[in-house]
Image 1: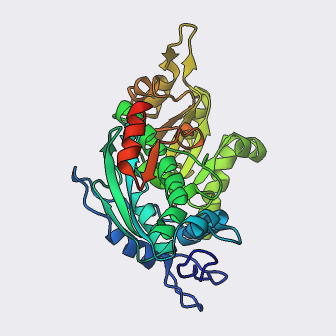
Image 2 (image 1 turned 30 degrees about the vertical axis):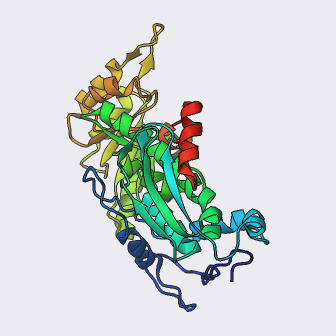
Length: 360
């Protein structure tokens, strides 16, 4: 038993356990476990389909959930629940949106509840990617009261962060069209897959997951390699030697660098050119995208283009109008503002207090 919970202990993960494989301890693979959890996600009222998490070769979502639960429980368990709630008491708690936004983390919430206590049952009126309004009750969890309250904060921490990312992504993705929105690697350490999952739920797309799945030749690589041509030739040779077929993005900061990359496309592998900091802010607060637009025209569709730098909700529309393929924004994940969500047993009182404080 997990100390103090009154529910089965979390299974120990064998060293080297990774998604998609069974291990000697008999714990089922996290991929199968994830699919089982996600299979119970209710259909959204607006018809949106469930969004699966991104693929990563080493990230173990189950271990992240276990770490979050054990981080909260410590070595004594939930002493507040142990002190106030009988072991066999059951309850029903409802999820309340305290502001408008895009909900994300419902599938992950189901995983947390199932990891802590498989007897808990959830029922959702919406699905990941659905829009909710302030004051909307959008789901409930039923079962052992101690289990519900022990899991509550972990569930809300994940959902609030993911919903904040999804909400910001949705706004930016809509404003950027026809360009497509990407996040970056500026994610919370240990939560990268979860942060990037939220971006997908919000209607954005994932940039590279890490250092392993895409070659990204940035300014420091270029400086150390002795020039942009040397860096591209070295990458091309490396990929050929290793038999790797992955994307290659090269950062450029001037039109001269753009032209130099284009001049060797037939000699080196480049699939995308990053047009970095080619948007400047004017004294009146507006932005000048003239340099970016010229760079896009020079590329002429020969490879994908990605704009980076000075990207905000107020600027992204003008940047997207230049014809750039992608726009990347680190702010989607490194400057996230959590969406206000609560989980309450006494929902009537919660709504009354929310109306009094203008938070529901």
